[in-house]
Image (tube, rainbow, N blue to C red; front, side):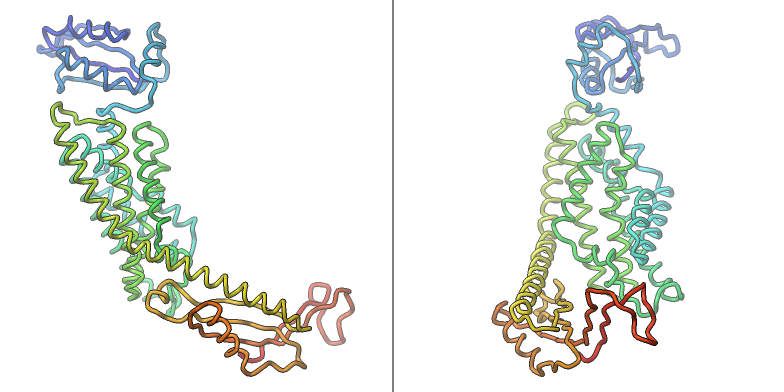
Length: 454
């Protein structure tokens, strides 16, 4: 519920109160003696979704758009007419005046914004190198990216050019600052003993997750933008939703910076593409949701111009996402193909060993070294098979080539097969005392695997 206080200009008291009566609103009127161009102040309660409608009606009744108006949230209102108002305005959408005020509050001062950007990127970079999801999530609580994303969309919908320009500028410069911070931090850490000198950041799962963007990343960004817009429109959970928006932007920006620091330009470019796609998707979803919700410019008569502006921005952002989605589609398709290949090889090898059923011979593991990047550049999949055999059984010398030929025929593509053999001992089902001189490990015998040759 909202409590509205409005100053009534001279000569419009009767028409304003008549408009409130026609709307079925209980009100209280106080004489105004502090300013000569106003004769009274009226105060009345109205549901959140009815604020915009009632204020438009008062504007038609003579209340100027620049008049002194206060909209306050209230916990409890007792009024005979309130139930009828609630039924008439059942929604939870706030007014455009409240939306504008909240968007202004969400975009902090420049110094505060960039301070939090730097701090969140430092924490996120640390979390990436530590492979700590909890640390990365903690960094997202600090990141202030929700405000500029929302204010850019609100400024577009309400035809506030300055708000739109500042929101876009903060997003772009903030993410560039995050990438630069990640690069500088990565370079500095390489000069210390805090990370191994030969560290390959591509092997860190949290980093690898941001260097293989697919269409699922796009859904994360779209959902974050919609959630952010809803939280502002309905005044709930904006802080937590801001974490979701930051997750889509800061970690990949920090990953791009690390790629630059370690000289891995493929990592830097892939993460930068993810940042840009997520940024566009967040802004697109927020802009569309505010438009669908029916928000209009603060000044009357600008609706047609805003509609054209929103349409052009949506088209430009959609084209940008479509172009970048080519990269997302390539990664999605190659990831599916490589994982399908690995699974097919594993099933094929397991079936071969099951059919052979050679006593004492077991399939220890089957792995496939084949990344999406390898597929794009035409590299052959490398199949690594580890076989356990008894000491008294000789391994066939041409086994790798035989499996290579068979898998090539089955898969319809060339592969490279490497076979490794280990001496395998399998424990008996019944426990027995260990031989003299052998330690009693964990109270009984265990299987021992000794590597021989690969």
